Image 1: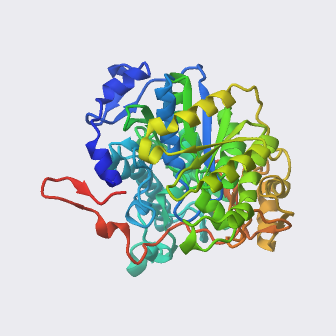
Image 2: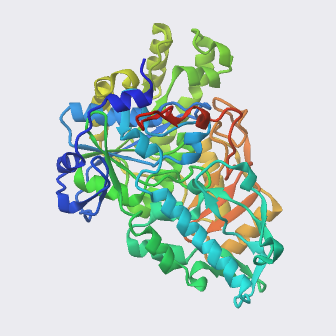
Length: 549
């Protein structure tokens, strides 16, 4: 079979003006970045299409194909004659050159131009990186120039960022040899930057600037917060982001409009594309397919409990993506034998899927459809086992092969999703915003993860008390934990019970306007693997990129 990049290059893309016209946009409503990419500069209206959220079970290291299924689902809807638009996140260069690879889908379910989307695209991530690091530069310059704000250099919270995997930058010293004030610094990958989260939660350019001004950069020696607005940085930072805040329009291999914009981590942040992208898609199409990072316990929880609250939106149906291989892995199957029929392991792993179905149906009160990403190794017995199990759990499972068949392979899933989305439903949340931070965290653990509750380190308790005293107690909470388990222990697969999630630290994100609870070790600056994907990427004599996946 052809590689992803070979398939993408074999596609005859439509001019972006033609794609814009499918959404009712004229040339005056777009800013072109060449023939196949554009920024949408039209104001969104109050028209609301149907919103479909795609999430997944707790994934394996290779992922379950959530983005690929999202793209195939949208193409399937288009084949059914629906006016549909995708709303996806932008890839980060770190994973592209690292282990995971690109994030533009796969096989015959991709967004294109694939090389551009996976690499520099329209420069959004570079703008976010620049705005982030401008604030850091202004902070250190302020300290060097006399430190009028009396900033405590031992309590600086805002970090520099770079859109690349580079473990050497995790812990460094800056200001050496009298080039500024010497202190420790820690780089994050751009996807983990608070600026990325802010851009994706802002509802307008003005809201973006307000949030940037509210970033907590550190504390002064009296223990008071110092904000980005105290450094008079928010104006220049917003100027760097004035184009980045506009949603990007591209297309699928089959010419379905796709808005690709923003890409925050689903751990330290909320893992969803921008609110402005979702607003725009909902105002231009009758059906919108979007996704949330990692499994439903992370990305979908944050989409439903945080993004939906901020944006005032709710999905009409939630799709949970799974694979037979991943379910067998949750059931204890050996990694080397996942392609062999193993109904015993499948039975032991199915409770992970059941828990996610229960969450969507009974916690959030939304219709749910299970999309089984089909592999050639799936046996008829395994397929029948999953179908019957999901039906007993009160949902419908559709085995789909959009990787090999594109939109044609997504039609059955599209039919099931469209039918489910017509049911009347009202979004419920897993916690009450007015409750204490500790209770909100415990409610997520109990209601979404299925655990007994949460425990808190002394440091976490102190920071919670401080956050509530400073007026941040009514913000949404973001729990940062492993994506591989419903618990905070990556080794507890399937559906563990009776566990307690231990919160070791609390971070208040004043600009993003959420509180982060750190449960476990969270990697904010990944490193490259022994054989990074970058070793296989290059440019041929014709100037064509190869090796991207």
